[in-house]
Amino acid sequence: MNAILELRDVRAAYDEITVLHGIDLSVSAGQVVALLGPNGAGKTTALKVAAGVHPLSSGQLWLGGRDVTGVAPRDLARAGVCLIPEGRGVFPNMSVRDNLLMMTFTGASREQIEEVAFSRFPILAKRASQTAGTLSGGEQQMLALARGLATDPAVLLLDELSMGLAPLVVGRLYDEVAEIARSGVAVLVVEQFANAVLDFADHAAVLVRGRIQKQGHPDSGLRSELAALYLGSSA
Image (tube, rainbow, N blue to C red; front, side, top):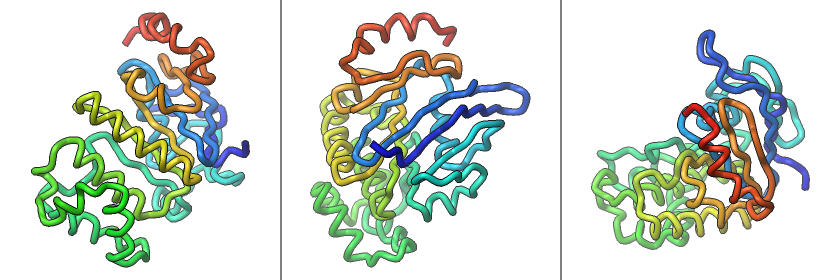
């Protein structure tokens, strides 16, 4: 498969502290790739590099076969890269409908955005006039996903989708993520809790201390090695 998103020998740092030590990672259209690892491994930094919101110290970022290293986040967003950060990325004091309305800057109409959101997440239609901050955690995550889908992304970057949610809710959300990928979107998801995502991932990579220690299909023996890889870290 041709990769839509590629990180090639990427190094990244905060001030003088190097966080990523030359990682290689790629995501193809229709694929869900899980980036796993303990706290402090550099997962979120890798996601921020992919979205253009954190600079590379060295290496390259490629999108759709083009070198986009150093391209501004807004330009990457226009090119189809959508980042949904940890914390759900919704406006808590606004209604569900107004959260969706804000996405009309993409050029889509309110009706188009609501049709996509409400058909994929029917519960949001029932909550349309409700303040987003009063939704359940799972419903807020659905709203964040719906807002992201309004940009018609080629690449969807998800940070800790399962954070603070019950396993049953997480399973439903990942069912939707898998369906989004099947529509041709390249999905890269960061998770600390591997069991939440491995049943839905086509490929997984384990990041420890800023280096990818193991990657492959989740059923290629990677699952059985996770505990040793996590425990072998200093995090």
